[in-house]
Structures are given as structure tokens and as C-alpha cells.
Image 1 (cartoon, rainbow, N blue to C red):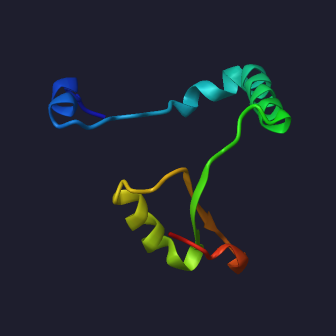
Image 2 (spheres, rainbow, N blue to C red):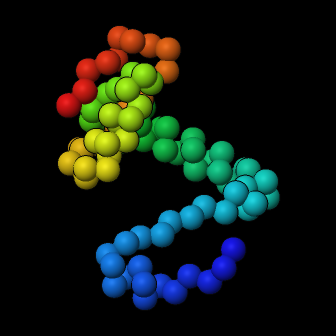
Image 3 (cartoon, helix red, strand yellow):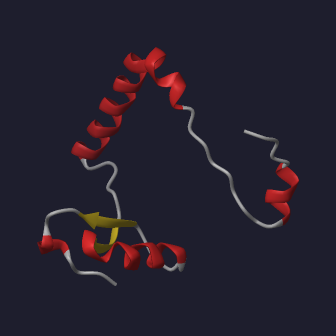
Length: 89
């Protein structure tokens, strides 16, 4: 995998985020509990996702450009097989 020096990320204002999937099989009960808590927060209305631009799958490059522009607000949604959600910013 190589060595990554954090200084090079900080000096260029970049982030490196990773997720180690190899840990998941040993933590399934804990993950299920966390997911249930998050969904309960959503069902009760205490948290609400912010949905931004929507794109049909056929416009995936446009969705990527919107994200790359760093001008989007909320989550960018790409719909597969549903042309009804083809509105975008």
C-alpha cells in the first residue's frame, strides 16, 4: 500500500479518508445496533437528510461535475431506472 506522509495532505489542503471493511464481520451486532439507532432518529424526524441535485443515471458525468465543482448543497442523488427524478441544479 505504500507510505503516505500526512504533511503532504495538510500542506495542500487535502483529505484522505478510508474505511477498513475487514473489521465489519467481527462487528455485525454493533453495526446493526448503530444502524437501528440512526434509522430511529430519521423516523422520529430528529434528523433529516438534505437532498440536493438529482440526476438520472444517464447524466452521471453531470453529477460528478457538480460534485467536483464543490458548489453542491446536500446529497447529490443519482437515480437508476427512474427517470422521474431527473431534476437537477
